[in-house]
Image (tube, rainbow, N blue to C red; front, side, top):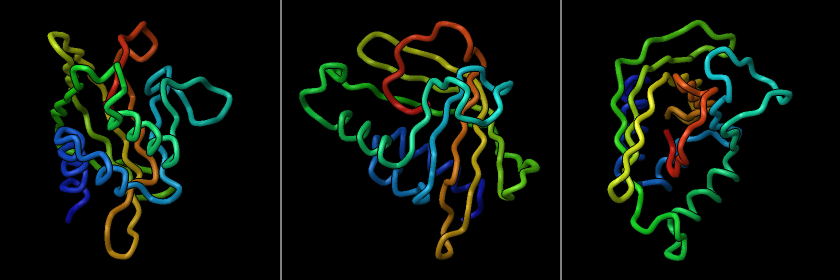
Length: 152
């Protein structure tokens, strides 16, 4: 599987609500990060983030989504990712890909539309791709955003 196919597969798993399979795509030290200031924000613990989750925090969020008593999921949220073609970008760690996206999250009669770009830092583990970092730079990251239940 090419890196581009892997990125499309990752989005498909989220859209199909196959969260456990999605989490398995992350490396042991994998991280899901949504910077508060979007693309302008540099990495570092001194900055606030909309989300900054390792595998443990991601697994806890997935368990909450699957819990039938999670009132925020009645009715259940659904999502759709629309991706442009990933383009390889320069990164010290290598295998970094930038992908512009549109993300639609729907719950009941309400829809949230977000735009931005992903940066995936990928590593080969046993011949398979794994996500070391998925950075989500939202176009309107610094503005008030609605509650987001899933994973843009």
